[in-house]
Amino acid sequence: MKKTILITGASSGIGKATAKLFQSKNWNVIATMRNPKADMELKNLKHVLVTKLDVTDDQSISDAIHKGIKEFGNIDVLLNNAGYGAYGPLEAFSKEQIVRQFDTNVIGLLEVSRALIPHFRKNRNGMIINISSMAGKMTLPFGALYHGSKFAVEGISEALSFELEQFGGRMKIIEPGAIATEFAGRSLELQNDETIIEYQDLVTKLMGNVKVMFENAAEANLVAGVIYEATTDGTDKLRYTAGEDAAVIIENRHALGDDAFIQEIKKQFGIQ
Ligand code: NDP
Image (cartoon, rainbow, N blue to C red; front, side, top):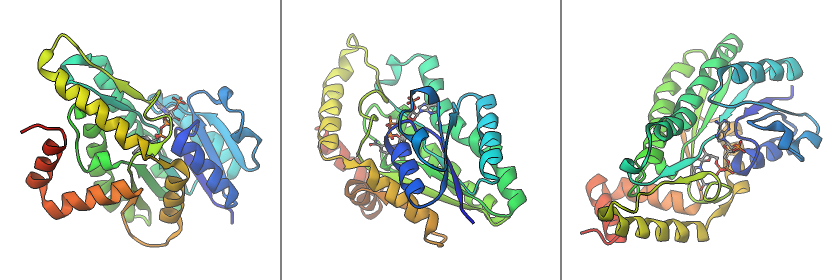
């Protein structure tokens, strides 16, 4: 029987590329987004339901799930992909900005999962795939919010894997490196306060570092391919890196240990 995946944040980047890949592999796709009216592409594909879901809006979560089940009868896989990056000195952020980062990247992911798990449990089957990041395994200066949210995704996902296994469900974590999407553009909330002179040198270095990282960014299709592999490989493997940079950096942290790895980051930023 044809399988069905529900994807959050399918309006662009990794979510959209994954929607197209799964559709081409003969899956039903519930492509959810905050503003479905803006979609001009996915709605024209067969077996794709484009519908509204804002991960910070509980009603839109349950409406999207109900619509998806009504259309396709069942949901087999949830891809928690929606997210964005807030970077900058903590002092420069308002409480609203802090809450929005965690509401979207963490609480949103928990709420969509919480809404779908009873369906998975009833079916004694179901997979949750959480988009973490190499940013969930290492940090950069001024990344307290974004890295904090992705470290949370790592811990949440690992702990949930035990829970899902109790009824035959499965968890997968995807850790992409730099990927050419809207992430380094409209999905990057850069906050600074130029009057705090102590940070400005390091802020400039961070900007330069991010620019270089994204000059060699991989395509969103690469991540979509890794997500498809994670969904279909039939293994209990929990974590999948996507991109050469992510594989190298995560392996380095593992090999060096925390303290030596952090020293390397300091060297890279000229902090000694
Ligand atoms: P994009 O900016 O292209 O996509 C982000 C998506 O998240 C958009 O569809 C956006 O929707 C959606 N989104 C944001 N807030 C909400 C919300 N409240 N409810 C529903 N959807 C929301 O970037 P990516 O494709 O790169 O990002 C996807 C995921 O990949 C994120 O979790 C990101 O952290 C992660 N990631 C990205 C990397 C990269 O280098 N690109 C690296 C590692 C991880 P809208 O169109 O409405 O704004």
